[in-house]
Image 1 (spheres, rainbow, N blue to C red):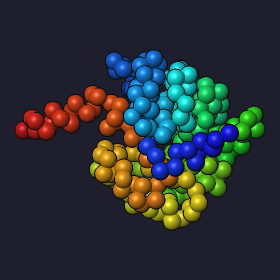
Image 2 (image 1 turned 45 degrees about the vertical axis):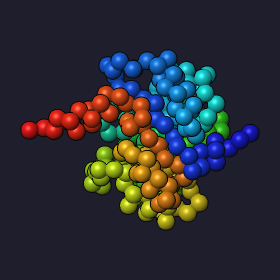
Image 3 (image 1 turned 90 degrees about the vertical axis):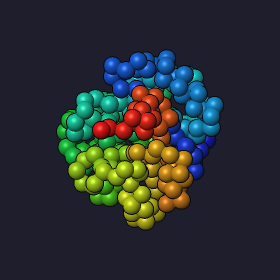
Length: 227
């Protein structure tokens, strides 16, 4: 069987997600979006929600990173063991979960969550981290992949305009041999290339490819800057 992590090496992962209440918020729509980005050369897809994951799994063959967002504050990316199991069982080859050192809603530690998840079936885990300390702790807890997903969103680091390349470089240096995925505010091909050159195993792009509402806003503001 092909190793999903190695399949992603050097590639583009496209996050196909829509926010609650938006016109594109439908599993069939996200599955079509996933098919479209795979046709364009995406090495993998990242998707949110059990229904979306299931639909996308049935329509694509690239590695699928799945997560389940529950809530808006604190630990809300696949926050509990129950969420993680559901994401895996829906068809995700890689389960992404909050990899910060913050308390988890079900009271389990990250290490306990990963261990119990793997007790029922082999599972590849991606830890969405916000700092170097998060990443080191997540690696010690058993995470297979480290992501910069939460850099700038947990209060430990200043939110950069683009990807946090400084954090990325720190992770690559401190975790040699561990796949580090750059995610968060990658808005241009040049930024994606810079992340790979900084040592990223792969790069996740979401908003700049799959969120037309935001992209439209970028162009509108360029044409009509705020007064």
